[in-house]
Structures are given as structure tokens and as C-alpha cells.
Image (tube, rainbow, N blue to C red):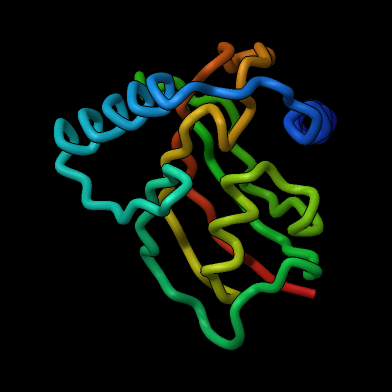
Length: 148
């Protein structure tokens, strides 16, 4: 059931129309910085606003946009509530992932493990989905199992 929900989430995120103002983006960024400081977590920030920490670099060549990736992940809200936990690897084309996952996948190699915090504009935006309220900042722990 979770895989069906996950696929629906991916499809809805692809068609998300909400455009966030600079003030919205600054607010999301401020919330993420506050969370990181409170939890004593170090991350790098990309120009898009994605925060990440590559915990294990993996080996081989970087994942490419046209690749199909098998990965497991755990997703939760800033308050710690788990919204998804896929221990058994799922498989998707990089091009079909939410924006944040596309961006980070291109920085990873097979076997990589990464921690990331994604603001709403890079995830599910203003869509309210099951356990994910609209405009949620999400935290993901991801492990790349294989790349085709």
C-alpha cells in the first residue's frame, strides 16, 4: 500500500503548481537552520535550498539523470513523526523522483548513504498527503542499493 501511495505522491509532486515567494523560501530555510542547530547536525546547503550530509560516499561513477536507482529510505517531519519507512528497496528512474531526490541522486554513487532535509518547494509543496501536511519540510535518510 505504501508503494502505491508513494507513486501517487511522486506523480502529484511532478505536477505541483505552487510557486513560493522569496519570503516563503527564507522562512523554510530559517526553520531548517533552527532544526539543524538544535539537533547539532552539520549539513551542506545547495543553491536550491536542499540541505544534505553524505554519510557514506559509495563507490563507482555518480548516478546519472537517465539511471534507474534502487534505494531504501525513511522519511519524517521536523517534529520527528515518521511519514514513510521503506526498508525494502524501491526502484525508480531518477527523472521520476521529487526535485530534492533528483538533485541529491546526481551527487551520489552506488552504495551511498545520505541524510537530507528538503523544504516544501523541493518535495510535495502545498499538497496534503496522508501523513504529510501541506508545505512540510521533510527529512530523509536514504541508502542507494544499486544503479541500472
